[in-house]
Image 1: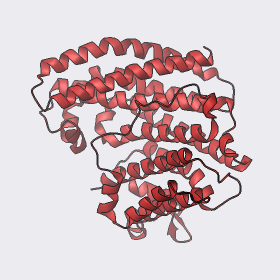
Image 2: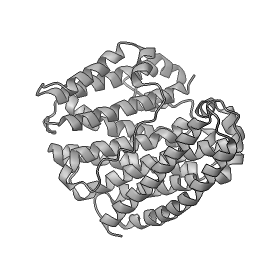
Image 3: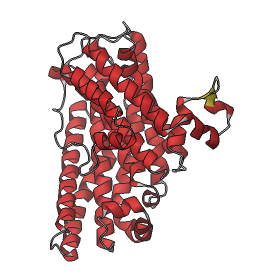
Image 4: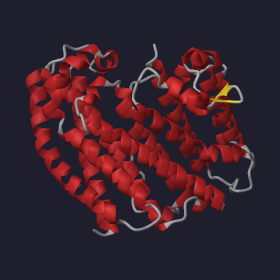
Length: 385
């Protein structure tokens, strides 16, 4: 399969999955008026026929990508395996619906997603198919973006030094491998998807997609891109904004967020560092608030969780994830944070290893990446009650 065929196949499958996602959303929203469950069943039956073809072609194509021989081969292979796992979850929703329905009824966040309707078998399947289609949509888009990087030097568009290039590559390989481990563990027991909070499966694909967009923006010249940015891939709707989350924790944190956005649109020649400084301080203050020293000291006494008497960053992240007892998730979160902070820390420190002439679009994508990460951590922390 040549590169152009790969991109065309991924684009076609993604469009089909995105169309299913929109139809599931429309059906779900219609339940608040007069839509009957027999109509829901008709929608499920209709989409199943179309999706079965997409799933079959996707699985075949993903299996062919393991032979790619270039700098991104291990990453592409890991993502192909992860997407095969997500693909199998998507394909198994009908089979596991009855098994997971009672579990979903007991989970507060699943009940919020279903709008507290009586969870019939059809509604449980609709919820799962909407959930897994969203996961697959983001994940396929991320893999498409990362496959585009194969012909370029990471960070080429920002004149990144060799040390920054290596950090970017290390971050990409780390997040891809732990992402694969996460979904391999979940797909090995598909009913597990209902046992965890939806944040466990919903947000890692979004994080990987945001990381891929940053790498694409700082690496691939616009004229060389295989695909236009996909307008179908967007943030999850009908949830609290980041500003609302921060307001509940400490209103002063929103000042740092506003500072980052103001710097983004300023004419300051040093605006890249100002954006990075604001968002880095926001991240640091936030994780110290939601994972405080005294809380961690009560939670753990392991030597590896401390450095010079203070909790390590990994310890704080483990503390944030403590209610979700799933090591693969904690590993992913750790690598997610490391990858996201690579450019932010380089810009924040004013290093000469990286060009300061970021475009407004590049800074916007970087800021979007950090906002997504912060929301992810806040939603994980909310699981602690």
